[in-house]
Length: 230
Image (cartoon, rainbow, N blue to C red):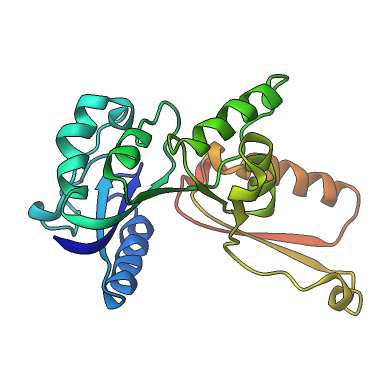
């Protein structure tokens, strides 16, 4: 039996977006240098995927909520290792990986989240139930919000001590340093796919409002999309 592994579940098709192939590959390289294996489960694989067929673990939408699928596809992989971290990103309830965490005995479940769900009046009740699920290892015991806003929202949903923030992108200057910068002109940068889910249209409307008010501001867009839609 091998020592340790991280099993990552990514709700993105391999071969479709270069970033989502290269990023897990770089994580895997770092883990392997530390003697930890990295196994990636993906929703699907395009013909352009660089992952060899023998390394592919097709995880169709809804698989993580299917107890039989978990038993037949995840458990055999996890059983090859003494210690396991299940890492989910971009998967939403129902996710029943807690069963595999509980069965393995030496497994943990980490969750990274970049989306921010809307609040509800039942948040406090749901948080109590989730905290109980975390105690019994049926829900992630560590959660990472990929922004301060994301981490704040996770703290409203799960046990606060189990949530941390990991920042991506550009680290802004602290407020003390910003005071010495000239206030205008201002330049903004957007990097991402030009699709509604990324929030590019509200950003464009906000920039238009600023220009209408005479603010000297410009916006640069970097990412794939249909220019005619802009």
